[in-house]
Length: 234
Ligand SMILES: N[C@@H](CCC(=O)N[C@@H](CS)C(=O)NCC(=O)O)C(=O)O
Image 1 (tube, rainbow, N blue to C red):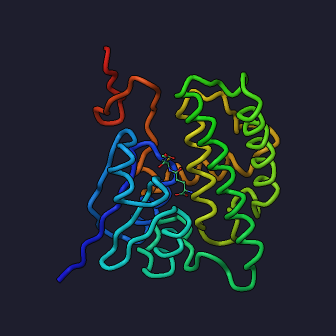
Image 2: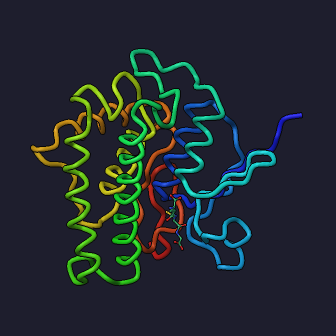
């Protein structure tokens, strides 16, 4: 009997998008428990004590936090064959001979995600990052983190790990694509970041990314018709 696999996520979440992309790289089917906005605390706590998603149920295994889920998926399941002319997906979450380097990159990308997420959440609560010292510090941090990523990508034709598409590459890509699809005034493109731009263009064309598009969202969007946002009041 096939075991039950279910992903809890919110539609626009880049944390969850990274997980959905890796589920596709593994060719794994799953039930989508998808919500466009965050439900009540009572509902959310049934899924994770963090009150956050993504959360994954895979048979007897129940996990939350995208990094843990990504580690589990990469460490548990084989990859689908790579698309023609594209890099294979990484076989490991972290390379044994580059353990500290890979851990540092993953932790740094989590900080990039959390900083961007804070700016986004505050904006929807009415606080623009330009008007708030803490949020502005997050915006400054995002720029430093992007510069660090540029310096740590292996080359214009490579991601963080030579020869493969790594989880780190997926995480950087989902966050820069989020910055493009939200009116947050966070710019990642710069003449000084050619490696990030090349990574963006390569991954944007990858089937697992195309199958899990990042959709435009701003307050008032209540659903989608294909990839077109539907507004409550229009
Ligand atoms: N560290 C968590 C962060 C997840 C996260 O912030 N999820 C957002 C959706 S993008 C969420 O559930 N936010 C609701 C909240 O923080 O109350 C992870 O990597 O999964």
